[in-house]
Image (tube, rainbow, N blue to C red):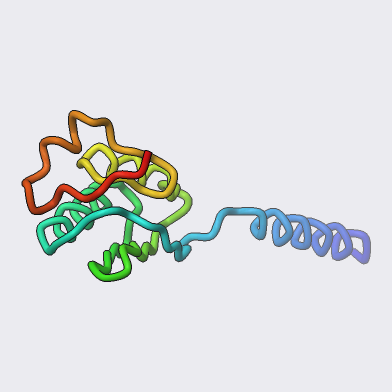
Length: 114
């Protein structure tokens, strides 16, 4: 009986240690995204929410900072940045292709870094 209790305790400890290795379910990230106006804000946030796993996406017009809360089991910050770049906006890691950037309305055309 004593051996069974010890084996069960070891199994429980093993499962607990394994559970801690999992990715964070809801993680917060902040990233820079280029844009100018409220149209940009709507487009950036819509692109972010188009990625499965994004719980919250708020882009600040003045600071150009996108605050994200996402489920790391479903997506990564890079997935979100790729979706935003596809919508025409450069991020700190992923640049939009010129064709997508040029499709933006004239008020949304920001100065691009080389």
